[in-house]
Image (cartoon, rainbow, N blue to C red; front, top):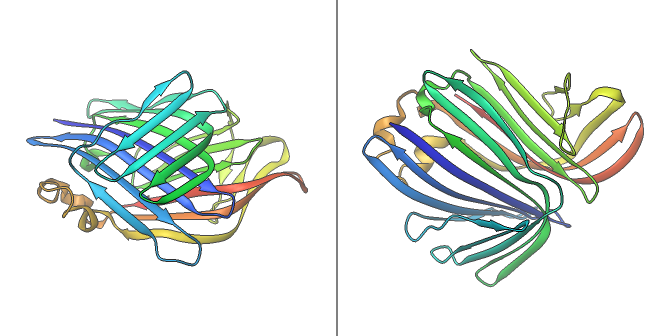
Length: 257
C-alpha cells in the first residue's frame, strides 16, 4: 500500500531569496513516517537546508490564513491567501490516484527560521497520491509557478505513457498553452511568460539524497534510482504581445526518471 500526503509551501522575497518548505506523511508498505524540510536559496550563496522526521505537524488553514510551525526545524510561518484555491484530479486508475490542490496560488507570506526572517509573495499546494512512484505512467514532470502582486501562473506538465498538461492564469485554465524547454510559457491571446537570470536551486539524484533522512525508502525505490530533480528560480515577466504586464519571480522544476 502506498499513500503520500504532501504540503509544499514557498515564498520568494523581493530580492530573490527563495524559501521552500515541505511537510509530508508517507505510508509505503511497512514504512510509515512524517517528514518536514526547509530549503533557503540566496542568490550567489550556497543553499541552506534542514530536514526533520520527528515532531512534524501539518499546516492549518483558517479563514484564508495558513499557519505552520515546526519545532523540530525551528520554523514558524504564515501565508495569507490572495486568490481562490484550485483543485484537480491529475490521475485516476487501477494503480491509484493523484489529487492536487493549490491551496494558495498567490499569497503574502512571512516565515522565521531560527534567527532569520523572510517576507514575500508565496504559494501553497497539497498533493495526495495513492499510486506508488514506481508505477507512475510518465517519465518527465515539469512544474512551476510565477507570482507577482497582480498575477499568478501555475503549470504542471507530464510526458510519457499518460501525458498531461494543466496551466492556470489567475485561476483560469489555459487550454492550448505550451511550455518551452527554456521554461517560458505561451498562452492564448498573445500572452507569454518569459524567464531571465535563472539560477539552480537544486540539481541532484533524488533517491541517494533522501535515503539518510527517510530510512526504508531505498529498498522500495527500485527504478527510481535514476530520478533526478532540477529545481530553479528566475526573474519572470508576463507579457501581452510585446507589452510587459508585470514582473515577479518564478520557481520551477523538471523531474526525470
